[in-house]
Length: 451
Image 1 (cartoon, one colour):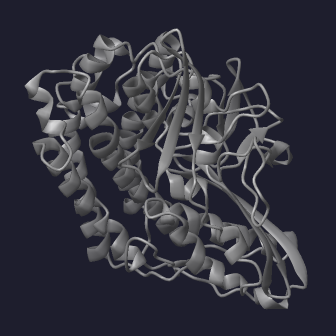
Image 2 (image 1 turned 180 degrees about the vertical axis):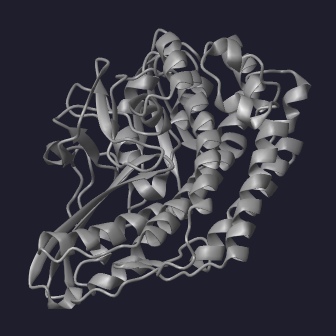
């Protein structure tokens, strides 16, 4: 038997095609059928145009794509021995903008995408508050996320699709009043965490180290845990339990984990495969079923995202939960909400460090148009995981542009007899509703996947 489900309430569209044997999923394919082609669109465009194009790859993580682009362009300067000077103020404003985008995404993902599906597993009417478009918590979370994201508009001029980061710094010069306004927007999100998501004092939550601490929560997190445990979500959704983080920041460390050993990243071992991917202007072969490519490190599959970041950065609470429940749906979801708390705390501290007397931008001595040929690359942590950009420039024009998104790592197709990360997490389940929840636990983004 084969079932085909259209996965809704995501960025773009996706199909989950499952084969069944003895009432269990024996095979799963995640199909992304809408080609976008940003890498082709960028070819032969003026190099600085990439700062306008790439933030439009995704409506959720445009800041991440912008930061990845600007740092790839600055890497070009480094590779021709003309490294730019970036002030601490500019670095802070870039990281603050990216963090706020991730905070907004985490709130929306939990309340608007995965929690409505998890609540459906229970018949208890008290969980109607998570119903899309109607539930009180769904509506409240939407309001809080919309307020929080306004903090980006203060430094970026707009959201989404801002292009305020450029080689040499940022085109933003916030006043003390602006920075105070940003702090106030984040404070609203912290109050929401205390009153609604966690139901516990914010500082007390940040000191959590084990499950006993977690059981003190009294908000949506405990609703999630209660439904999750009644439906064995702490036992399902497990993939390879190998993790990779390519970017680093004030909160995140880069690295990879395979069989509990943390090691450094060698970027030369990152590769993309298109064995099962449609090709532009070429008739599809029998084995090709998606526009998504496959991302590999040393020819192995790795999961990327908030759980991977928590493990590699040694956040004690999530490491304790992971030791008990591994890379299950429960651990993956909890890691993302735990990251929300730490991002709120870290970002408020970063805003307080901005020195308004520093310059935001130092003009490069040379134009990228003056560089004959060069290559630049960057690694960023976006809301869903690691994002990499690589650009080759020739006489001021883009020769090639390659993007590997977090969703390609997590949702890309398997190769030969080895499943991709999300495929492996789904195969063996006995319910299509649980299969969709497992898929959502990675946060599906079709537009990023098929960029």
